[in-house]
Image (cartoon, rainbow, N blue to C red; front, top):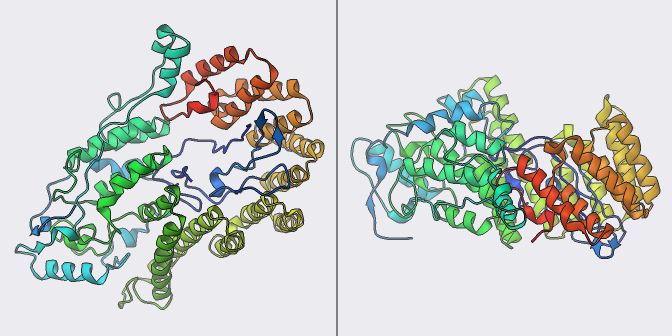
Length: 552
């Protein structure tokens, strides 16, 4: 099969989140954290399962023996009770944890970056605890100077379930096909070659050495007393350690290690245990109230189940988060605090909280829509995407385009055309190149849905005249050439892409297309695939999916 890329234009950090985010996320949603993008259209009118979410969807296309073609559609343990660890102040966090705010400052995660009054103000009330948890926290508040006995079943006691998953599939392939001398030239960062802090973690993530980043997360958690073999033992949490757990779990999901992520998520239960709240540590966080769990971690916790084959469980968890967000938003709009109590926050602070929780509610709705799409409930999925527009009106063109492309995937050309026309009406009010490109891209996909590859190629070419660096149009134009019987021209276009900017265009889906075309071109494709392997070795990190090279 020939597939298509989801180009992001830059490396993503798993701590980022946006509509189409956490953890986000697909298997790839957890670290994909940016505004809603659009799904992939089919190149034929026969229905197929649409992608689980816009950011990584790659629908099947028309048949081409011996491969199937795809095109790119993106615009871019329980025991008896014990003395609760809160009775004494937890040990000071190791030095690496002091870097968390500096490293992730400026993140485009609207959920990890709360307003100043929410993070530091005396009226901070985020997600309110459940009744059982509230009882424990009241006992802690009443006996701050004494020991509070908490049933072990009511606490989270996380620890690493595996201590090292480092590996380098690219180097393994080089040893197999190119020999030891060539493999020795492969140099990538690992957990030993960077600073043992969040600074080093950020460096590994930005270089796409995600396996090494998982290992470094493990080392930092071990320094905090939550390392390998510590699961089921009493521990204390900080905001930094929970942020670190979120990064590690998000990386595991990004790497497709869903079972591993589920095992390490298990001790956290439903994220409502007393030791996950500021009130449980009055000596460390005096006066602070609410949950220490990052909101993106809640989204990741809910979304993970759909990748384990339990989409209904994901939907149920997301619905619970939605209910809480809606209640908090209603309280804020009535002039109350998040938990419904009287509030003395300034009008400006309340407005900031309203914006934050509206954004969070939209994020939950977006995840619910993705889950419904995975469940093939297209009607409810489309309704949910429409609802997201209310919370992200600036993303209306992208969302309408996405709904139109869902229609293409299920063979409803007329409905797709209607949505694309709506996009054109909306973009008429917008200035700039991106609106024009979006309209042309939609027209091209509409022709693809009708198997009119010549016209689709014409529109993709027009986009390239306006934006020669548009990777989506470039890739799709090459795919159209292939369907038009121009294999040599298609190959030249893809090869030119890779040579022009290897760091950008050595994308797994582009390389999958290219290696498939090599197989169609000649029985001597192995040498060309090995040349691509050498190019990948010089540019990509340890998270690169070598299956796209089709060498194994």
